[in-house]
Length: 229
Image 1: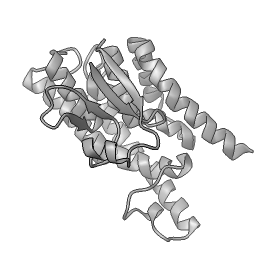
Image 2: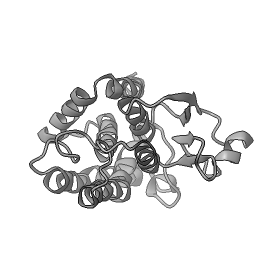
Image 3: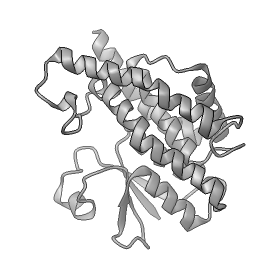
C-alpha cells in the first residue's frame, strides 16, 4: 500500500493524484492540510512539502516532489506507457519535466499564487515589502512571460504528436496538464492548442484525471467567488 500525503487544491499534488489513479495503483490518501509543520510530518519530510509519498522500499521511507514520485513509481511498477525506458523517449519526458519545474512553473507561481492566496517564495517580489502596485506589476509580468514556455511545449515537446508521450499521456503530460489548471484563476487566455490538450488529457485518462482536477477547479471557483462578493 502506498500512502500519499496531499493538499487537494494544489496542482503539484494533483499530478501525483492523477497518476496513481491512471496507473491503477493501490494507494491511500491523507489530507495534510494544517499538518505539514507538525513534528510527526517533519520527522518524515523535513522539507514540509506535499505531495509526500510513504512506501516500503524507499531508503528514507518517504519521498516528495511530484515528478520524482511519478518517476519512482513508474520504475518500481514497470509502467512503460507513462515513463518509457528507451533512452531517447525517456530523455524527452525528463527534459519536459525539468523545463516545467525550472522555467514554466516559477512563472505560473508568480502569476497565480497572489490570486490563490498561496504564500510567495522568499526573495520574490510578492513576498517582499514592496508596494501593492509593484506586486501586481510583477504578477502581470509573469503572466505575460508564460507565452514563451507554453509555445516551447507546443512546438518542441508535443510537436505533431497528441501528447509529449506520443499517442498516450506520459508523466510529463500529467504534470503539464495539472500546471495549466491553475491558469484559470487569472483569466489567462490559454491558446487553442492548450485548451484542446487539456480536453484530450481528460478524455484519455477519464475519472483518473477528472476527480483530482475537480478539487483544484473547485478551489479556484471558490477563490473567484470570494473576490466577486
